[in-house]
Image (cartoon, rainbow, N blue to C red; front, side):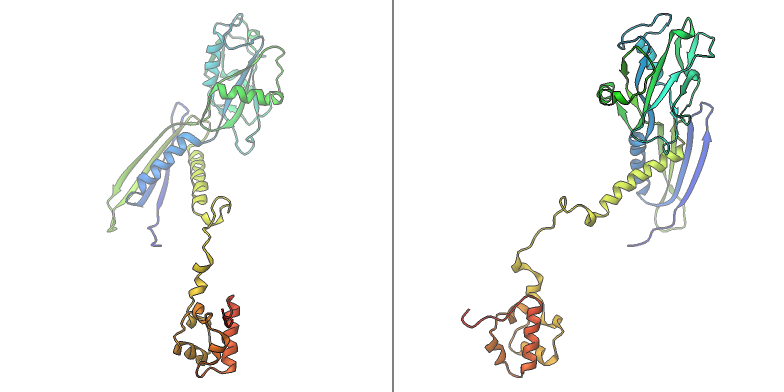
Length: 336
């Protein structure tokens, strides 16, 4: 395989005032066409498959369904749920397992105001989980005690509808550790994607190379729950995992990929040339003299016919019979 030119890789990070994490990655000296090949694949995986943490269920004290209202709270339940969906959480994927749930509670013990924001949310069972933006509005209340709620998070990728989460809650309801005495678990839509925007640009380079070369500039903007560099790393790992499967077909399960069985008469050993048998010169010349150049042709002879071959002695005869046996053949019996 012809080798390609060594690539130059550059990372240009910048953090915007809105707390969005934006980083540009530059890859240079790509052969023509590879800029779009890499750009399209990475962009699609980044937008659809990067893992993050998101709410899938909410439980509010005294609330039995998502269409109610709460005394001394200005917002109705649908509006509160919508506000909670806007809250994003930073976490360490090495600590939070795929099947683990994280509970976040509304802590108003030291709160004396009337406007509850995401600053009052606290992960009680996992201190590594943090709210990325503390200014998100949740509700206006007449008293801090008016609103008591719990949010349940899990890791995932892509988008999961509240209908799917309803089924998920029913399946795992005994695993959800809630301290709210009265109230139903309300399913919400889960938007796991931490990627806000992905943009890439391919440009041709003016280089000394006789081949046309390209530069790929890749800009990733996240919501702050994950660094752009980590998101790109995960996207690459996902693609590599798929390419490893494609590139190792011979190692796949035999039940999925069966080799076509060939009939015995088509076996290559039937047509093996006698030059490949490492016979002595005397034996080789004797067989060629009678026009037998293939192993299958020799096997059509009887012992008496082979014995009658000119210049073929007992030692050479035994050598040929031994070679036939080695490849699963024997001389034809008289009368066959």
